[in-house]
Image 1 (cartoon, rainbow, N blue to C red):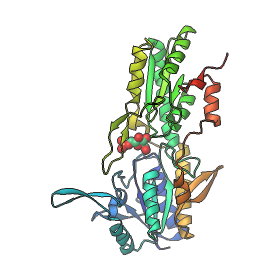
Image 2: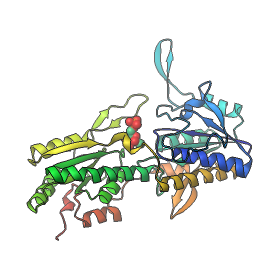
Image 3: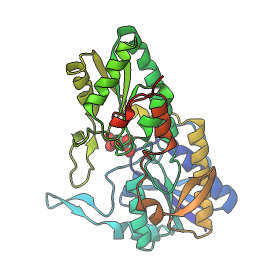
Image 4: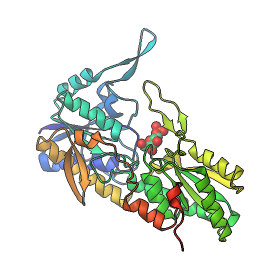
Length: 368
Ligand code: F6P
């Protein structure tokens, strides 16, 4: 192994720079191998100035930094790229051009750091013969095959701190504070932060909610002397028999953007539960800033292992965490089933045992 490439695709997540640093250091120190950084995801293979060498000097000081020194792009799918031809916007498959560029650069391996969408592209490129190794990144924690993706822990910490801070106003003003969190179609961030922050109601996509249950919980708390409540809503949560709420529809390039369910819940609380409510949407604050120690540790181990996997010629693999150990699993297996909150698992059971309402019928608070 003489030369490898690395790119970061999809949205940014805390820990991306830690992966890049680990890849560069491991490749140079252990394998005497050169590393090339591809800028702005797969787009870097198409742009003139999209590839540059990464050295030990390039990665100095980046471990605690959020974002990615390589840039990311969540519309850079080479299999469906938006281009202008004769004044018209068309979608083109440019994967052959990407493959040609990788061969021209004499890359022996490409390390792709990304979430579900980016890793799917990596798998398709591997299916076309490219030597690809994947590293799972996302605050949503929705990539299968691994217990945790890096970025998730930081997001949960930021969301938990937000809940702590909302408690202040909730108690002082006797309000129902609704906090909308990210997570796409999974409620991992909401569930983990909600339990860690002591939320009263947690709504997640995996458990469709009933508006009446929200009101019942708030009323019960009021009658028992707690004049405030904290409601944590995952952006993908939806009422039973109802639809998810979107801030932006999908087009040929962008996936649909969830957002707005917090306002729906807040309005309902004010109008039907007769309680004063305020809604906070935490948004991209969950993805920004310095990664937690856990995310730096996990991202570093993923990066170092990805280089070892590439050196061993284990392509089409994804690094994963299993019972505390970093393992190599197949990209195909990891992407076959997206990871979702186990509604019968211990996290949900724990939330229920604590008297947290999950917005469904089953969430009747246990007797005190
Ligand atoms: O996948 C990470 C994530 O932050 C989701 O939680 C969220 O739905 C989405 O990305 C937001 O995407 P964008 O940054 O394109 O608005």
